[in-house]
Image 1 (cartoon, rainbow, N blue to C red):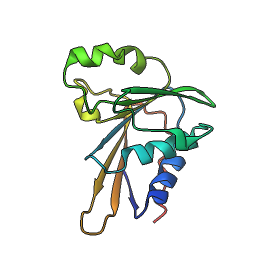
Image 2 (cartoon, rainbow, N blue to C red):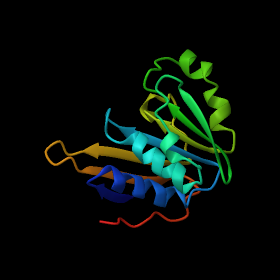
Image 3 (cartoon, one colour):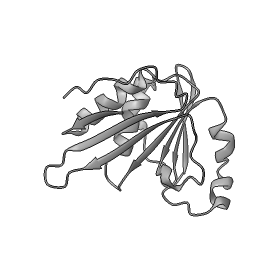
Image 4 (cartoon, rainbow, N blue to C red):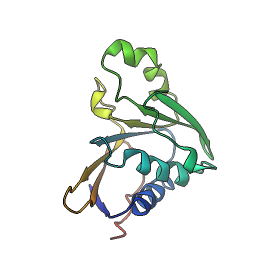
Length: 154
């Protein structure tokens, strides 16, 4: 497991970008963290590292549920499960098809998945409420395609 600390939005973006540069499809990235912890900011960094032309256009798909972005290695899917509550909801967005698409798939609120993919990169973001420092715990599971984890810039 790799642990990174971020004291700003820019640092969170940089950590995500460093990881995104190393990702190769197929790859599922599971994001865990409280509301406002920085999951979408981290995702912007990932998408930048993967070659999305305008990572500032990356928004939380809380209402659209799934956003698709073109990257240098094919489509990237960004899914937000925050508002979903049942298997029927998950089925309605075509989750199984997306997860098996062979693409890079980023899932916010991954704890809502009924079954966790075995080959995934998990990122857990927690915030120290006193200092605002974010702790990003990054772990490869199974045959994750991230060859090596980046070293913490801090």
